[in-house]
Image 1: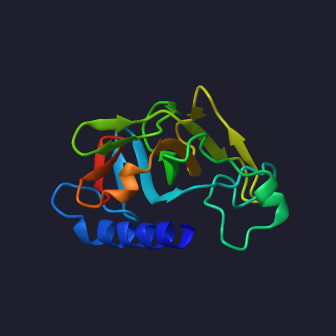
Image 2 (image 1 turned 60 degrees about the vertical axis):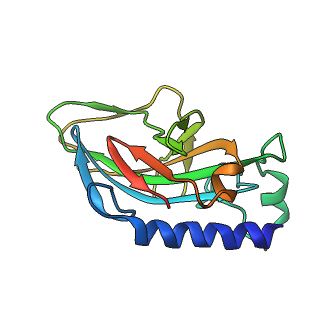
Length: 180
């Protein structure tokens, strides 16, 4: 089952890179919207994600097939077998003349109307892999050239991954990314 899901995820990501065009955003490209310069790094789906906090570069990333015992012991999985986890990474910095609060988890839109935006938001506090979960957002001060990596997770129905014939998009800071 995990191999089938991995193959499906690979197909989804490949199609998302090929399907981008027109006004849609492209994963890995930098955009500026409402004073935020950001890059969508990836959108991945998984049945279990790393939840081992502290100095951990893999925090809130899909667990690899060769996951360690610590990763497995600290993994987050959906409560229902009918659900999966969508893990998103983006990098953002303030390029406006005002302080900006970053609290955007973005929105998944499946089949033109089934939307999902509830989930967790975390940011990398330091380059050594320290992560901090944030509820109310992170204030990015004006005139600071620092960019931050943010990670989002949302528990969503597996139908988003399994039904390849239905459209799936992700919208972040007003830019829409076609995932297939």
